[in-house]
Length: 175
Ligand code: ADP
Ligand code: MG
Image (cartoon, rainbow, N blue to C red; front, side, top):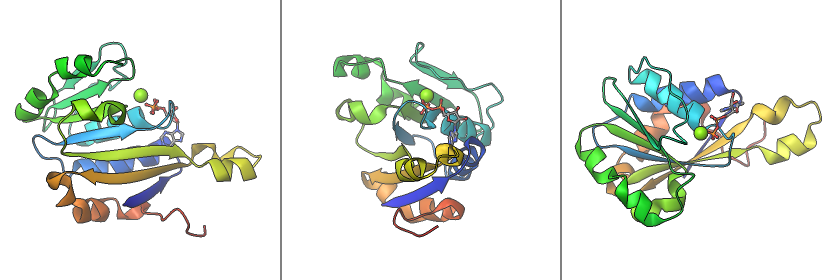
């Protein structure tokens, strides 16, 4: 498991951009974490690094937004889907075969309905720092955990760690 830490939305976007350098056709990223944790901010940085010029917005109502870039980016948000059958209907395997990369917000909650070869990124607020610090300065800290699922990402996890090295941060490290 790899942990990273960012202290602003811009930093999360920069981390995502560093990861996008590794993007390959058929890649699947599942983004997990509460509302406001930074899943869409991450996708914006990821897309920008893929050469997407359009503004990337949350696809909560549209379910899927597709953007043109160096690789096509499919951006999904499955927050509103509760039935796995609805997720099957989105046709994620076909998206992956089309040669683009696919990023799914809240994808962890419907993982059984998705291909089982993906990189899961879990976004969390730094609750301890927030609790200890009344100034609000900690509100922008996010801890990101990278979990490879399946052979595709397990084989690349060292490359992932290298790409995001500037932000690597073990949770128990002293600041
Ligand atoms: P989600 O898609 O997970 O609901 P968003 O990316 O839409 O979250 O929103 C994240 C919010 O938190 C944005 O307003 C962003 O500016 C803010 N923010 C503050 N610090 C960070 C950080 N370190 N990483 C990402 N977003 C951050
Ligand atoms: Mg979002």
